[in-house]
Amino acid sequence: MTQSRWKSKAAWVAVFALLGFLLGNWGLFEKIGLTNEGWQAFVELLLAALAAFGVFNNPTDGENF
Image (cartoon, rainbow, N blue to C red; front, side, top):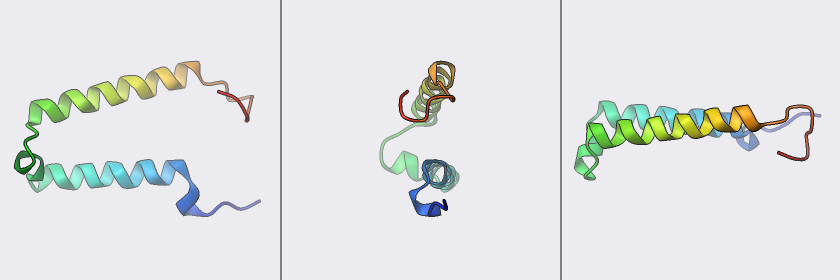
């Protein structure tokens, strides 16, 4: 069973990560009112949530969390 790459959650996470990286490098966050400290706090919160998801995820059950 093949899956389209555009339907892959991992592919979309990678696209959004790349977008965030590019926006940060071009200084566009400051133009929308987001400081470096605010962006760093957001990323740390996101990483903590992803780590919690990894801890509580059950990889043997494909239908449930």
